Image 1: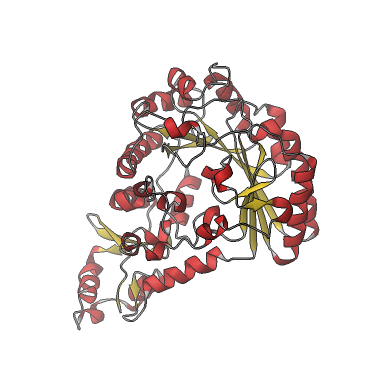
Image 2: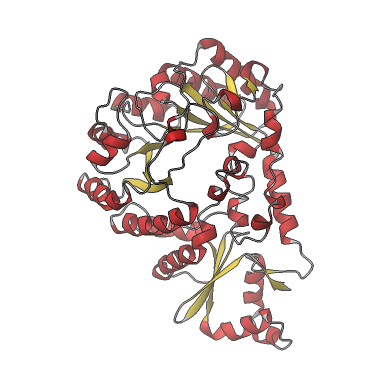
Length: 453
């Protein structure tokens, strides 16, 4: 047996913790057991006698120890392939409206305002009907533009999805990414009735910062209108607030969190940082000329840790570790599609509105053009840096869109690559407070901590 290449160790006064990215498990090893474990990992013959069978079994079960001949890279490649071609689950991202009532200067979409019409909706339902006999779950992300500009289509399709999935005993869930301006209480109730569980809304700082970064199409401020809607939204939906951070607003994050805490949102919603990236892929999108300082991936990784300190302090997050994954996103999963408001098909969120990235049409969804091939042939295991990276099991190559663009290549990585020690250490601090013993899923430890709160 040998040690996994995807272990991350964290030492404490009376114990050591080891996290494994392949399993997503965390193991606590008390001080008196450490010499035996370290000797075993160093290949000392007599060390196995000093390790309890139960501890060795935990190390093996958590994939911290693997057989000498075991090919971890091959195992991950197989996991990636199976995830990419999983036919049991089907997912659609639906752009009910490519139009938007905001005019954000960093938006990566080339908007051509349109509402999803009845013909496109009917085609979407035909695709679902084709899939229902072979799937066990169906998930939808409502997207835009601003999806609630096309609320009528959203509600009508939701009712059909629920009826069809229930009739075939297929699990159905949905979430929505919205700017929050149209999230009145009636809409929140309608979304919950349609099994929309999570709602992502963006606030980019205190009012004067946010209103500059996310104004209406007419140039008006939007901060307080969104906050007003969040007051009732948290009673209906799991609300996640995204804060897009860069050089122009990062130093104002704490002020935003203070305002949200003063509004009584602590413990009622979560807040996380998003990375601003200037995308210029041939479409006339605002981000192509976005001139403000955008963090590089290493810079964003460090900023994310400082952001996490603040959100923990104000009650908007708790430490977490990334889960092991297979194929990480819609772009590289064969059984997932993004449907534009006119029925055009894409594979990546950042491609929406870009005619150069259309892979087909919903009316003939099985007849994609050659642009699909680049997504389904993207292989992170052909990248030397990915193959050698400790973060590979949890990011599987990161963002394929960025990886395939020479200008964005260095922004492809998940932050775990740069701050894995800090992330594990932060989580271990919570595990110590929680009283973790032995082997546990990092996710379960976090869930127990949240429940205890």
